Image 1: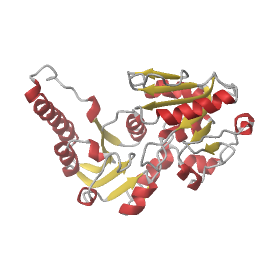
Image 2: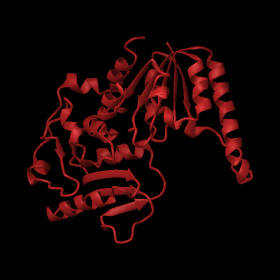
Image 3: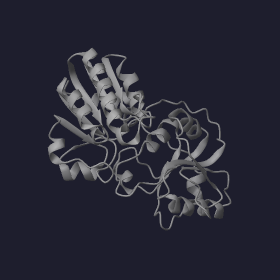
Length: 306
């Protein structure tokens, strides 16, 4: 099958998907975040227009070299320049969109959604309100746990300052339990007076670096973005590495992999972490359920009608 996979792959998850699809398909992967920008020194008044022009030309060349595609899979189309997007859709017989952000962050009109034969959304509320197909994110990398206790009691990495107050509440809760070997990383400028256990940084971490820290931690934290009900990739990283999760996302209880022994849902305004959740062993997820969340299971769902 000839597949056009197009997105703004800031996190690196789509590249994992592209590599998986290439095992059995002819794949043209276009990552708009990685396209060259040769006009960064041009006068500011014309810089944006020149950037759009040169990147549209790159997209047209890549798609033209691929010819006609059986299917286009567009991830978060609202993040892609409309002209680039239209070029990809025109070259594809079947059009599928997958949204792994909520409409609260990247809204789409009903007319835009109607451009696709199928639209999948990771957000159950968005799926219900717009008649879309609900689809979770995926386990992008298998990891065999070695049984080591891990270097950190808990780990989180996130971007932006909006969720820092909730993270400070969790840091205080861990402190009260006498647990201080956690690693809390936030990508933004340092916030004066923030909890000393939080480390601020500027350069985005690679997917591989995040994965290594997940493996070295015993519990993964997940603080939902405002308006989000879909599950972040943290759940699937934790599932793959057999790690527990503490989350503010109440919708996780509706998923078949949910087990209160492994996943603790908290109130971000008043977090409570029972000591037995930290000390009790991880409970393995049944293999048939686990397989559904792998890349293989995810691809089977998306391309089931191909």
